[in-house]
Image (cartoon, rainbow, N blue to C red; front, side, top):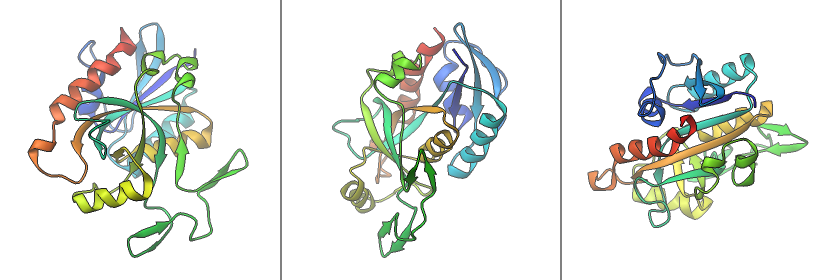
Length: 232
C-alpha cells in the first residue's frame, strides 16, 4: 500500500495521538517527516492551526509525496453532547464551511456569489465536501476506524463562544462538531484525488466557556487510544 500521511494541527495533538506508544521524530510545523505505521510507510505532518496553515502545509506535502490516504486527527467541539459527549471519538463523514458565500445579516448563502470553489469530477464544490468513512476506510487499510460513529462537522476560523451562535449553526446545518481545519483539508485532498479520513475526539461543548464543559486532557487521551492502533 502507498504511505499514510498522518496530519495534526498542533504538535500536542500529534504527540497525544501517537507519542504514547512509540518515539516520534522531531516535529517542525509544515515539514513532513518519515514514520512507520507498523509495516506500512508513512509521513507525519504538523500543519499549524486553521484553514490557511493546513491548506498550505498539506498542499505542499501532497505535491511532493505520493501517498495513499491522508489521516487528519485532532480535537473538536460538540454541538450534540448526547451523541458525541466529552472525550468521545468519531470519524467525520462530511465537512461544511459555513463562512463561504454571500453574507446577509447572520445568513451565509454559499451560492449567493454565483461562484463555486471548484469543479471536481464535473460537480461544483460550494461549501460541503464528503470524506472517507464506513467501507471506504476498510478499503484504505484504516479498518481500525471503520466502527467509529460518523459525524458532520463545521470548519470555522473563529471558534463559537456563545450558546446562541451554536444553536444557530445547529439549526442551519444540523452539524455535530466544530473544528478549525477539516474543510480545508478535505477540499485540498479532493482537488488532488487523495482520500481523507478525519478522526476527532471531543474536548468541549460548542458555545460554552464554562470549565465544566471542557476536558482537553481527556480528549487528547482518547485521541491516543484511538490513533495509536495504527502503529501497533
